[in-house]
Amino acid sequence: MKQLFAIILGVLFSLTFLATELHAHGVIGKRFIPSTLTLEDPFPSDEMDLFTFDRAPKDKEGRETSFGFEFAKRLTPDLALGVGWEYIFFDPREAGERRTSGAGNPEFSLKYAFLRSVEHEGILSVGLGVEAGGVGPKRVAERVTTISPAAFFGKGFGDLPDALNYVKPFSITGSFAVNNPANRFTGSGDDKERNPTTVAYGVALMYSIPYLQSNLKDVGLSVPVDRMFPVVEFDFETPVSGPEKRHTSAFANPGLIWAGKYLQLGLEAQVPMNKFSGKNVGVRGLIHVFIDDIWPNVFTWTPWGVIGPTSK
Amino acid sequence: MKALKRYSEICLMVSLAIVAAFPTVGLGHAFPLRSDPRVGWTVTIAPPKVTIWFDGELEPAFSTITVYNSAKQKVDKGNSRVSGPDSSVLEVDLPALGTGNYRVYWKALSKDTHVTEGDFTFTIAGKRQ
Image (cartoon, rainbow over all chains, first blue to last red; front, top):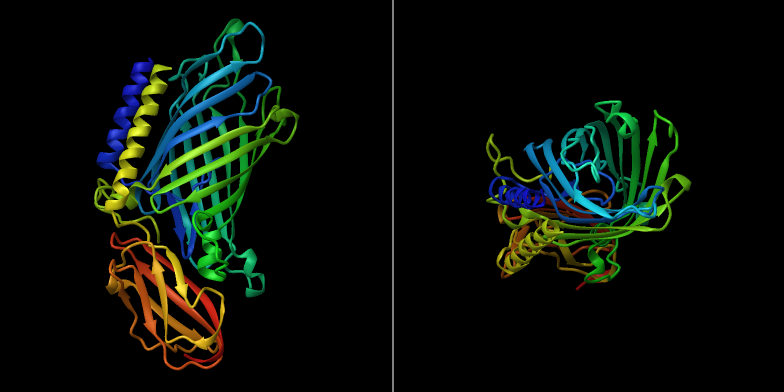
């Protein structure tokens, strides 16, 4: 299974480089919004998380650590398909249980931007996510397939009055998704599990130092600070059915994103905000590569012809 | 663990390949590095031109820079151009400008057709250089 996983990863990477246009960031008007680490961003884009790292806070079942990748490919300027996969390590909380690991379920996504406002630096998108249940081993992966319709938004504050110049570099993005399990129950007997429907939502607030220095006031910051984006993301998930109904998990994720010309790096802490969110602070990291910026002539292909860069 | 090791190796190799390719590739979005006059600054001597340095090569035909005064009248000489040894500098000449606030609008098309745009102000508090 592990060898198969490694082979699939290798093939996917190869396909990525041969046949897709990847764009790792969203540009709308003069606003550049880098990909956030915790929440899905609103931009349908050609993007790839080359490497993600996630060490979650310890919850009542144990602690999960995962490494993964994700990439998305636009089929039209406003429509993108994506796929992501993780390799998961799980440390059970109960004594006597062994640490385990394995490849998680693959996740597929579809995202469509139906409204953009260059003037107001705004974007609205809808999406559909599918986690293919049962693909990964049950010791680390869900056995049920989950279907998640979602909505996303993004807004830069650049249209504020000039009196609020130092607020203009802020932008906010957010997402709202309903995670519907395909089956209410999986397994049987003692192994039977109830699969609750959950609502996941959150917002990310970030400050763009490049926006400040390029559009408002050159305050003299130099490399590497001049390309930094301090960010805080808040994410929540609420079961709306099952015995844990309304036990909302909530996290604050303060961090820093650095976006260079070809590469984006990000690091965030995961701070539990209530008793349902576990203990200890987790950490999340990201290496993002702007493939279409590096090899645009290679990565501008679609089955329907070349569609050009993501920015509009 | 073996799969993870393989995955890490693949990521590392891809990353190294990309990093190795950086110096030889001059494409991608073109974002401004700095400008003269500096963004949001007040100068005591009126500048003869506005210059913006970008982090990538620009397409001259579709990269523009214009300057407006506080009455929203275009005041530059209309000779916006791309210059510099690596075509990464955008500039436009200015006539003898008086004191006041000015706004610079720029639009940059990189060689691979990515578009970036922006605007900024500067203030003249003295006479032309």
